[in-house]
Length: 351
Ligand code: EPU
Image (cartoon, rainbow, N blue to C red; front, side):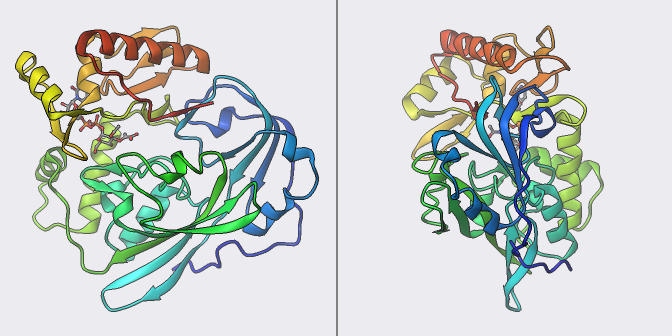
């Protein structure tokens, strides 16, 4: 087991790059230049940016693995890339384990670490691109599980107040692809560690139809953390483009949640429209279906396009600019609104 101290102090100063390309640091693979760029490997390094007035007059952007951002312009300030590593066992009982994980750890590697150690709770979230520090921000979720179910505490550095804040699960105000980090604290924090509370007695979540079907196809007789994560990996690899090959940031829009009345009216007109119960007595409608109905699935214009197997995923086939992808997204939003009266909300952050 890896057992590192999260954010162990180092004497060397934070290295700073000037006029640095962010192309390799965003999974859309679009070009954008950062005026300044610094990888942050230890919490203590963040205190350094409190020194000097330079940063006070500039925007500061925190970046994880860049898998949920679309750059449409350069960053005329400082980009801080979270590279804080480490996985430490905080506490352990016969039934549960509490892991403190550095915000810069890769999410999928963390999931595989848990599966390998028989810690249950994140196996349905295998292969989601991105970092551990980004996972609470949008409350990542897939195949019937959301990360909020296993988050005990979040530690974040306040970039203006220059101190460490701790958020309990309740403080995070988690919702569907939502948290306090997207609202009151938007752009103000770097999440330096997350404490996960995982179980040693798995409760397998196979309610999601696609997951059950995949497990059947694999001929799985006995469920395990390995077989579930493997099934999720297979579904995702088949349906979603690999950002290393085709630029993308996963679902570009959220699935819209509409009132029961609006849902009933739509269902009358479109009986095959896929929908599931949402939050606060709403119905969640499959945005991919809405987009596909408007004829966008597989659409391509230059190097910007809509993925051929998942209409919710916008892609960069090579040289698309952030502006071109955003323009395509805006037109999709417009056409879905005109046809269904639903304004899709972006899941991806636009800079
Ligand atoms: N569908 C279409 N056309 C398509 C794709 C899907 O009509 O091109 C329909 C399917 O038939 C299905 C429904 O849409 O009935 C839902 O599709 P899917 O199961 O692929 O899930 P999704 O709602 O499109 C959400 C998450 C994904 C997550 C999957 C699996 C959001 C915004 N997206 O997608 O998360 O992996 O469920 O749980 O909630 C992400 O957030 O980046 C992401 C990939």
